[in-house]
Length: 560
Image 1 (tube, rainbow, N blue to C red):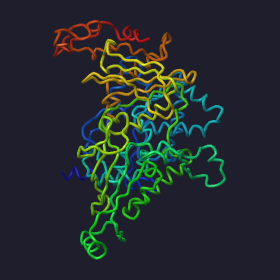
Image 2: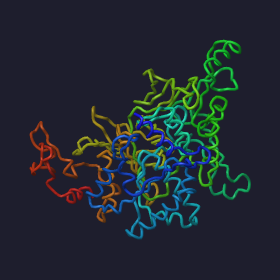
Image 3: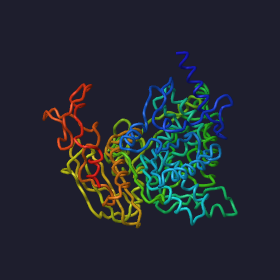
Image 4: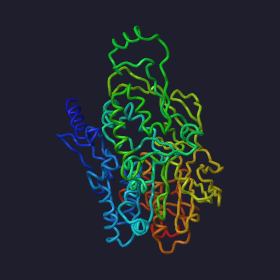
């Protein structure tokens, strides 16, 4: 136990940053790992727990199908730092640009970019940073030359409400630390605000005229359209944050219990506290933290981080809606239909920072409704679906706005299938700014993947959105169905004889020996047209002896 607590204290010392200038502890500093090992597995330890894999299975898929390991380039980043500090301290974006240019020289062709979760925010900032590094007339040329496709997996395009929970009360993410300690650590990272939820109707000033403006050149002012004020909750399903504050403020926001008792008896009558509610815009523009300044000592540091590293960012205020990246092929991939947090109620705990707030209720989106933590229905404007367990649906699905006015929609089972449960809707009308949600059926107990594809609205460009039922935010990159679809799309794009704009959805069969299994009901290997029983010494059960009849290369030709 002593060793555990000692390890926790040492680990925290190495993880914490100065909340105002983002520098390391004088006795310890941490830096991200490099190479594939940085993305394939997390090292085991007292704090991080047992060995866990992240992109390991995806890398294995690529290698199994003939991609050389040294052609897969990992570009990990220090997820504690805000975007401008990534460049200032680590020259991260200069190095990333150089990585693309070296890859082109070594491989002779453009790269495929895969980003998960916050990694998408980093890539978006890189694209904006690049605009200021390259002459405008060469910017698109550079992108076309160096990047063939961008796969955005689980991108929090409007932020995530979980960042609010982590900021105000702490989220341990399974680590053996208290929520208060987690909050203390999280609030020392200015990157934590990078995931704040924000309004889809408010945009920061254009980066180009801001740099030539002779006034306050380092202030990213936000401009909101009329929808921000005519719609409820900044386009989110409900009010994001409601805080309970004392009716009478004191000089000490979190006094001792004796002080609280004395204040109540001498200065106020017993009554209901004041409830203050905040929309996504009021969270991201700092209104929430400025209002809490009288009640929470940490708000001062959060306001500093927000103003310096986001509103004052020289490249981009990241807390503003995305536009489609100017890359030829963009694929937006995320999970849906999982119970996801979309709002919180906080109240003072009476304890000192960092334990001074407690969550009194949580609002979830699930099955086109809003529910409180107790399970009761809640008023608001539910999304057409729910999110992936971490990011809400409206944030994940913002990329549907990147689709054009005519979209082809296909829904198939996630598992291998023969096409009998395939549903399509060609040239579906899509109105900009509105969600596109098909009226298609779902068989009970079947998980589907729905593809939205547009290869016509912008000549030479393709945009696709994949929605996967019940795909969890943190595990989506390990899902076999995602790896299969990513690989098929990569194979289709790379092959000189591919005929269609997107890979066919008509069927899905096994591609690897691991995809074959024993069908106990029929006493044979499943998918007999693809798999056969072939025992090899060392097989310990029937499923291990089910193997592909043909090579993977021959099977892949069916998808051209």
